[in-house]
Length: 251
Ligand code: AP5
Image 1 (cartoon, rainbow, N blue to C red):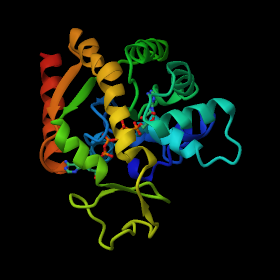
Image 2 (image 1 turned 90 degrees about the vertical axis):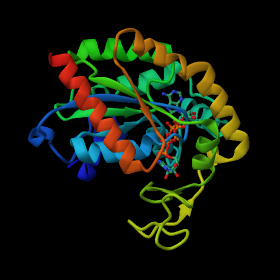
Image 3 (image 1 turned 120 degrees about the vertical axis):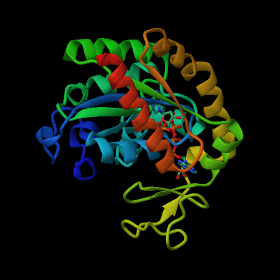
Image 4 (image 1 turned 90 degrees about the horizontal axis):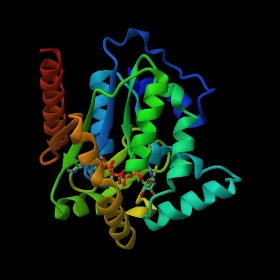
């Protein structure tokens, strides 16, 4: 179901209405995906959403979509410059952006947050927002992989310039080189996937995002998942871990 959802409320702000109503979904999962840049969070998010019928809410996607605006605000221009360098966007701007979309957090279809939170301050802000909305996180899936494999995934990534589908030059190649299988758009390399930006992103991850694992581990919300292997194998591992967690919480 989620593949048809235009996620209008997420991309355009809380006032917009999504094209698909979530009533038909069996169970609302509320999840955060954690892990270093390029570990495969976006790839898993797509697979998990398809399987669980929830929405993929990526803060990076919102910024990249906003980058196409004709006249981005000064705050957005600052955010886009930070992204290009590989630095994190300021907590204040990111939290405001998520606050404006907090309707997505209480959506009865659930959510799968990818790329947010990224700092302890953002995690605390998310907990407050969830309290205000009267909902709880089911779990935080933390994907783990050695650095050398992550760099290979990032430098081989290609993204469709039109529909944003994600490929990899060797692990997930398109049928025709440089052309999106889904919409025929041209495949491009993200500006922040160049070596100098990758180095900055990894440093930002180590300094600001890795400590989040402790934040969520303290109260038992963290589930560590190996990101080794094929995407479908990692999906299987993630679903199994979620099911085991659900059984453990019930008993
Ligand atoms: P964001 O868009 O969130 O990017 P990221 O976290 O750096 O993650 P990526 O999208 O690079 O990687 P991914 O883990 O999703 O991997 P993917 O599935 O694509 O953020 C971008 C920027 O926005 C940040 O740097 C920051 O500036 C800003 N920003 C966003 N949110 C923010 C926040 N909350 N606070 C502050 N700043 C924020 O996979 C990568 C490649 O590997 C692909 O080619 C894929 O095909 C391939 N692949 C995936 N799985 C496998 C596999 N199992 N085997 C082989 N290849 C695989």
